Length: 185
Image 1 (cartoon, rainbow, N blue to C red):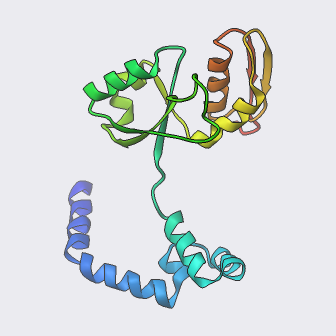
Image 2 (cartoon, rainbow, N blue to C red):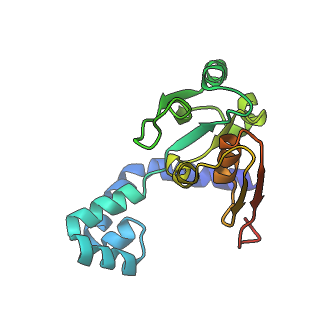
């Protein structure tokens, strides 16, 4: 019953796609905050700071879906084995290069996932061979550089990417007390 209603809406959207795209393009000119799906106060603040064209570029970029990055869990596997597994799992990936990811342990630790089956369906994910994590979130643990046998207090631990990366850096030897102010996280 509900699926029929949703399918009817989707078919209607497909039939009216060209008209909808044209109306959206007009709306981006006449009322760009709404056209780019941003709050008027934020769009106005950006316009004052960056000007009209740069604000439009920022809003367009802000509407792009984020890239998906995966960090190799070196406590369970290495990059070579993970990449071999991904090829078997039909995962398309790309190497990620950042200045702060230099050194033998960091050269092949983060990958951009270009296309893949649902993450949760991947055996490599279920076995803990990788963690979904933006490269920028590795900066704090890299600066801290925890060593095996140390004790670390992570006060902003949710959802756990930095914490688990610190465990990797410590080779799973030591203690990490991880907590977060948000109970939901």
